[in-house]
Amino acid sequence: MAKRVAIVGAGVSGLASIKCCLEEGLEPTCFERSDDLGGLWRFTEHVEEGRASLYKSVVSNSCKEMSCYSDFPFPEDYPNYVPNSQFLEYLKMYANHFNLLKHIQFKTKVCSVTKCSDFTVSGQWEVVTMHEEKQESAIFDAVMVCTGFLTNPYLPLDSFPGINAFKGQYFHSRQYKHPDIFKDKRVLVIGMGNSGTDIAVEASHLAEKVFLSTTGGGWVISRIFDSGYPWDMVFMTRFQNMLRNSLPTPIVTWLMVRKINNWLNHANYGLIPEERTQLKEFVLNDELPGRIITGKVFIRPSIKESVVKVEDGQASLYKYIFPAHLQKPTLAIIGLIKPLGSMIPTGETQARWAVRVLKGVNKLPPPSVMIEEINARRENKPSWFGLCYCKALQSDYITYIDELLTYINAKPKLFSMLLTDPHLALTVFFGPCSPYQFRLTGPGKWEGARNAIMTQWDRTFKVTKGRVVQESPSPFESFLKLFSFLALLVAIFLIVL
Image (tube, rainbow, N blue to C red; front, side, top):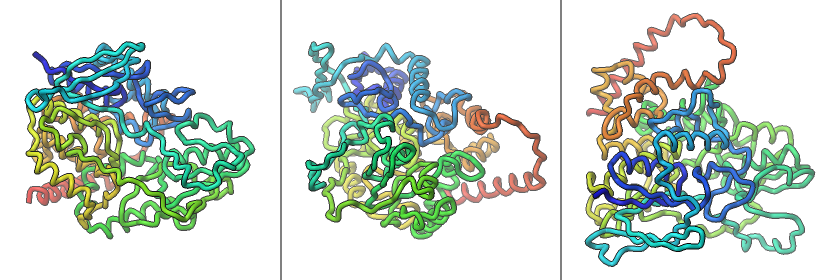
């Protein structure tokens, strides 16, 4: 009899978890409290309790070739950075293509998930749900929680003396939907994350004046990188990742800061982070510099001097997925991580490994080993090489995914690939680390993966090359290809050593 798995949430990670369960012969039941799938990517005019909320203008920060599911590319006529409405369409196409909808119970709230009395033996869970005011209880062999971490707003009003006497309007970004409310007003946006920066820029088109307050600054980059390429297709390559992780942290940091400042000198705009040895999450915004330089947005330091106490945010999860203290590994948390890369392939890869653990195909190490690793991560000790991921839930995208792929024997084997398919090997190593690479081999291998990798740039430029100009071949093209091949050989040799 197939193991029954309860999945909480039908967003990007929940859908991937359903599919992974079906691939491994498990019986998934997904509970979604709203009336449709999509999670964060489903825009509504009103805020729904227990669900992440977005504003009308939200566009993906990771391009379509880097943020798709690993065996289901976006339609080629979609823009490279996808508006939320089209992103939702893509998720629905994914659900329909793999026949996932029949496994989802909509308008069903999960009230509680508790261990069964014989948990130490069975590892089973009792899941209590509510549908149309009717409560039901069911026993499941495993549970996958896919609710994300953007559902609960943090609005520390106690940190702002006099807020009760303020005659204007204040609210959390979760409640923001359209910029019309800012027309002809003086606006203060507190926090320079992606949402805060987006809202400040949108408000600046209608407001009298906009102030963007930031305590620690941030690295602002454009979605358009070198030569007009999507930023993550240039930045997220196996070659660059290996190079970054091989160099001392100060050198990597200096090189990255120099590259980022080529587009925008952050010190001149009051944006430069105070802490530059630790990597901060990039702020993706193409308009902010223009709004600052034209006097539409004013950067200001923190509006208060005392420090607001914040919890460290660390979760006792082995590989950011499994609670280490449970007697049976039958609970998995999917998507509670902040990779320097797209969340969709990250959550999907987590689900692929987690499902095989839940099924019993893959085994976890003893609890003592898992706890030791978790504690080591909490200490935030820098390695002195590569980028420093010292903030809560942060992780090196390629390194983390490769680690999970290794557990399920699905990591691309570059050396053997170089002997059998050198063109593909070069593209995998030097080109964008797109999700299709994660389906080249191992369980869940996708026959279309190679073709998707070799045509990813075609799909990228299909929507931008409205006017095609015949280009003459570069005389150095053959030399560059030869150099790339030799560099790959050297890199693989170093890896093997």
